Amino acid sequence: MRDLCNNLDLKRGLSPVAAGTDNTALVSQILDTKGLAGALFAILIGANTDADATFTVLVEDGDASNLSDAAAVDDTFLTGTEVKASFQFDDDNEMRKIGYVGPKRYVRVTITPAANAAGNIFIAGAWVTMPYDRPTANPPA
Image 1 (cartoon, rainbow, N blue to C red):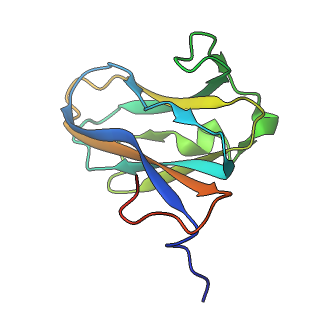
Image 2 (spheres, rainbow, N blue to C red):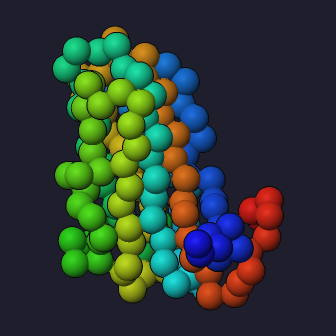
């Protein structure tokens, strides 16, 4: 058995969104990749009462700390795909993930709902990272 607790670090990505019933995009915290050997974004999906809602995932990166230079990440710098990280109305109580291996220092994820008029969906996200400097703190900083 390998020790993940001391080798991985967690960062808040998207605080739980309670009962989202519209098409407002959900934008993650910006992750600073300096000092990281790897990063992935984990999406936690609650139950959704909508019958046709879809949720599209977009990963953006850039060199500015506020991502004022954000651009969509080329697929060659993703592990997994944005399509597989996306989800829809009947993907209740599931999880999705997408990894980032790009050259830019800052990265974020946006989840954009469509047709979510009566969804009452709960969504949260977390950055799971592997810093070069280990062991990692517990609780995470």
